[in-house]
Image 1 (spheres, helix red, strand yellow):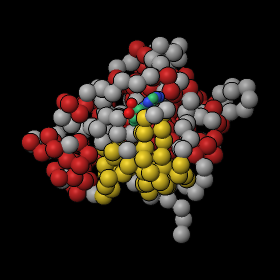
Image 2 (cartoon, rainbow, N blue to C red):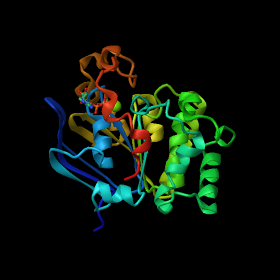
Image 3 (cartoon, protein in one colour):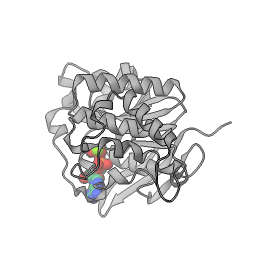
Length: 273
Ligand SMILES: Nc1ncnc2c1ncn2[C@@H]1O[C@H](COP(=O)(O)OP(=O)(O)O)[C@@H](O)[C@H]1O
Ligand SMILES: [Mg+2]
């Protein structure tokens, strides 16, 4: 039997005293779109970083298509769309530069882009409908355009797995529709997709399966099942039951969890090993 695309087994992660993941286990098969939901602070971003190999778990193991995350990343297999808070938007990079990062693994030491690299970047920019913004500084794009630029980086990279950390947060409808369509296309080409979102309404349309996270995986199944009020209550608290579901999490739940951005500030230049 072939290895699952993503295997997370009993993974525990601490930041100092804070327990971010507590023996979390998750298996995702190839070409599936898996939605990750959980309140702020439930460990979603940490789970992405562990899968990327950016954070080493204190216990447990992660395998990507049967190999280590570091190896999978070096081979260019993993595309990553970081959450906005984890990116330094002042970084002096154009949209084209960001997408070209996806080609680093295809270039030699000089990192001089070949004709093929440039063609792949142009194609990816077209696919996310950002061709006309190629020369803009990345920080000058709208929220949705920024997300699309990172999706383009993954496409240019030829990633067989895409990890998207809240790609719909603060995003306009056009970008949301474009990203949803692209993810569907990528999955039908065999790409495995893990995506965190607070948009519970969009979940059944977007995802083949859903995961409820609260430091550990509380539930993993069909979106309709995971979205049952009593199941959401496990992850978001009982307040969620007083609402017309599915709903975005209760305001008390969405209140930002503030933590040092330091760990992720360089995510923009860290997607490759
Ligand atoms: N770099 C960090 N330093 C200290 N604590 C952190 C750091 N990153 C995350 N945390 C803490 O770990 C927990 C999980 O955070 P995170 O994975 O960002 O959750 P989510 O993405 O679901 O909001 C939270 O309590 C958060 O405050
Ligand atoms: Mg997060």
